[in-house]
Length: 110
Image 1: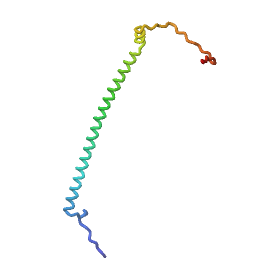
Image 2 (image 1 turned 180 degrees about the vertical axis):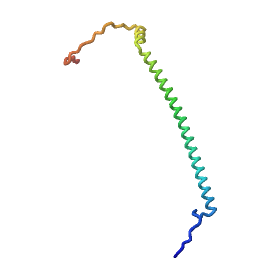
Image 3 (image 1 turned 135 degrees about the vertical axis):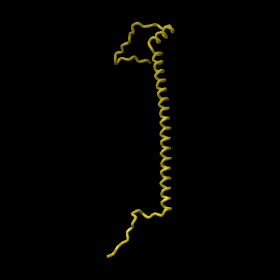
Image 4 (image 1 turned 90 degrees about the horizontal axis):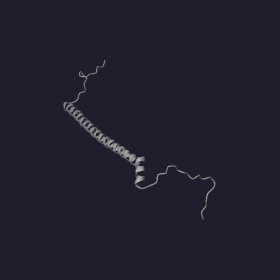
């Protein structure tokens, strides 16, 4: 019968300097990932603040547009037009007569 020598310790036999190097590499990777995560979170927060600033600017612009629309509507209102007509001494027409054009009859000028 042939007997094979088996390891008493089931762990891989890694030299002590290799274990230290592996531990340091894992620590550096974790620190690097942590720094990368913090940078990404910082960028996200900065973009969020920019978004809120743009939304505030948009809201202010919409309010300004609405105020200008109200002002324009008031300017074009019938009362203002009547007052402008009086100021310019225009005649108010009570009843409008429209010219009826029969299709097919046109006057030609020479």
